[in-house]
Amino acid sequence: MLAIINADLRTCGPRGDLRHATVLVADGKIVAVGENLAIPADATRIDARGLCVTPGFIDAHTHMGMGWQELAGEADANESTSVVNAHLRAIDAINLNDVAFDDALEGGVTTLMILPGKLMIGAQNISPVAGQAVVMKARGDVRAVKCCVTPPA
Image 1 (cartoon, rainbow, N blue to C red):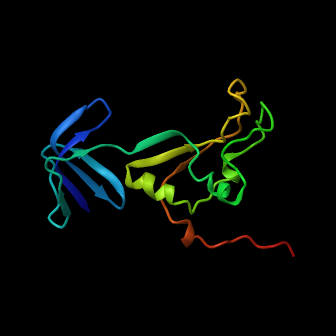
Image 2 (cartoon, rainbow, N blue to C red):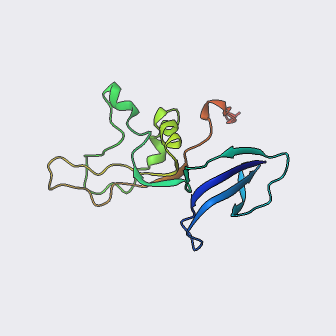
Image 3 (cartoon, rainbow, N blue to C red):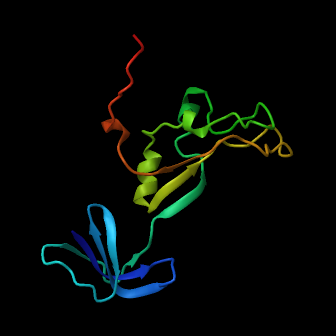
């Protein structure tokens, strides 16, 4: 168990801000938040005195992971072939090895909504339907995932 103690918590909920409070984490999940919590003796303690603890941030509009092919002369982040591109899916263009995901997580962003861009040639040609977004967590290690697709016999 992990205990973050003496923190100034921003709950972003009905409890509001808590001063000198504790967050208890077990198996990667928050199990208790509050003031004057009983902390198990075997808990690892992190003293956050003078620090502010917030819930993870949500980036509700990003192209993170989609610009990786631009270096090769290709562009996946913005589509400029049509005003309506409802058939495009952000998930098809995302490079999960993009270091931007690590940077986002380090900055407190835990959830991302990645969507195709909508820039058209000329400022008056902004696409109102750029494609389908994907919502995902900014954690995990895709390099540790093994391919489990079996080719057809």
